[in-house]
Image (tube, rainbow, N blue to C red; front, side):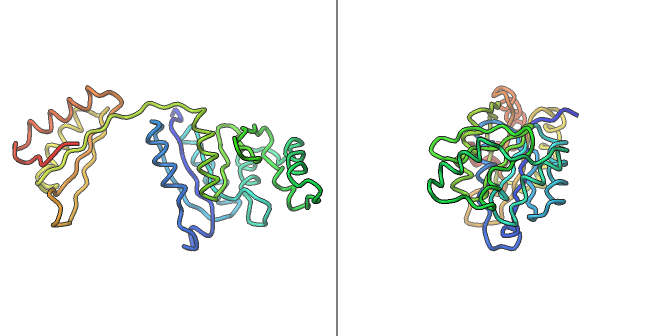
Length: 245
């Protein structure tokens, strides 16, 4: 099966123990959506080498691009570099250009052995210069190792996305005053006839809203979306539609 789209791995004990609320996953989802790169999966895992190796292997089976968030740093729990190297069957190497950058940044202050861990990367890593930051993006075999700190993650993500391209999806949302049971038959028929169009159904249970179900219709081509919407509306009562967006 051809690997397409992207997969994300959110790494951090702090996320799974609710010490920190994950901001990077939702932001990545939104940015990939805007760029038109389909997201195949998002997985949140511990700072554990075996867990990361397994997650990277799964992600690479389904997606062309893999984004990791977290575990990039000099402390004992920063194991992402080692785990990604293991997942690829590579060694961890110390990059001379990163060593030089660390010493230049430290100035007259000695760089500790722990600090030098920031110069380690999987063998074959390419460094993508990050405007306004001394630390570049680490990428190897279409895996992008991004930091867990949200501000840094967002900056480095934009550096990566500027090098990728996607196909923006056309979307129309329909709001109905009918329940899902009344819509299901029509949705089934149109979805079966038009497998290239993604149709989603999302009920709400808030009496203050003016609709009961939101239906989304999306596809790479606008005419495909309009065709599917036309089929849906033609098969439903004219007064069922509250609005279209």
